[in-house]
Length: 217
Image (cartoon, rainbow, N blue to C red; front, top):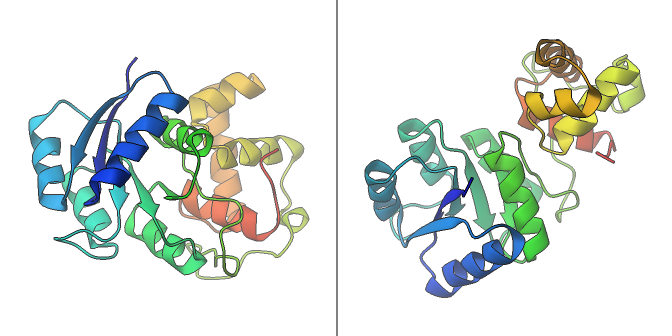
């Protein structure tokens, strides 16, 4: 099924480059373009449902994470991936807190862009492994810091497998297929993993696991 994507960026060259990379990385997605948030909102309201929004942080009519917050409020079912020239952990942290499902530097190649788009459009998340700056702080429901080592979490081997697949951006259904588990069983494992990490959602779980040095492969 052809993906329907929206790129919101005020630089035509950036938009055009992203479209070319998307066509290189996946099967010719349908791509709409907007040069400001207002135009993006208009397209979202008038067109059939989009699978993903690729958003620049600094637009003529919005700055910082306010665009993410507006999109999440108006169109909560459409995930947002930030494309930014910034790569520091603080910026990534702010975007995820505002509701973004992923973050990708504008310097990323077609392969990474395709991986991120497929992961997020499929219900997962995407965070760069090694962006510049210090490791992100993982925040939890209780406000307490998680253990510094994944071995201290008390996860079973199966739960660790589930966590690794969460880090790869797989939704519950695909995790179930990969591990040959019923989707209901996967949900139980996911809940246990989030609880152990003190995370409210998958994004926070991935950040916490990254902080502890865990890798998805």
